[in-house]
Length: 335
Image (cartoon, rainbow, N blue to C red; front, side, top):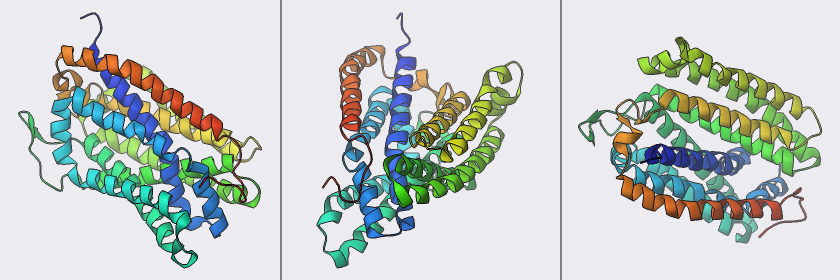
């Protein structure tokens, strides 16, 4: 085989996961920030800013999860039993949010607080569960032979709770900078202040997680701190510092879209750093992408479908954001 199909698919699934994280991340962040809104009108604007695009954002989650099942079945068979609880919590949270989008605007005024609380709790649960699952994967999953050999609560550790909190803060930052971009006036200034605080908290979380991760496995420490690998990994923290400077400076400027782009950049750089730590493992440090991959004939067949499907999803997503571009005002909305 001329091309390394397992590596190509690993990159495609990683891309799908990243696109889900940043696209669904900011609307999960809106839900996390819901209690900070100062009025019903502000909550309506928050909902209207993502109502046209939120369900399309979750397409990437389906692609990432379905791709893992089809392309890396061994990894799927090991990871799912290890992560049943956080994965189910995430799905219930996402279902709650989906119901809220459809019901909130039609609810009687005296009942609307119920849907506001459900939107917050669903968003918080989904974000926290995603972060905990990520932490559980990074810290390692006990494998014997070709099966999960751990217990029901192996996912629940101080490190996974830390990564869960980090993801919640990161998503809240994405939501706050999204609102800086999409809103005007006092509401924009309110969330500009929130973004400044959340940006500082996220940098602190990145620092703690980055220092803790190499201590989990000797392979991680070698990749980050030993020569000559350090020459390849050093740009990651440098980019984090540069993007942090861009984020805080842009929050003091009038370029409303730049804080959101800087936040996306922080997620991209930390995602790349995660990939540097984990590669070539899909289940650290037990199963590599080549050990977990389906037969080449299956990978070839699925790649043909992906070559058609992924450009269609990208085109739809880009068109939706283009159509609903611009500021969202209190007297306008998508219902």
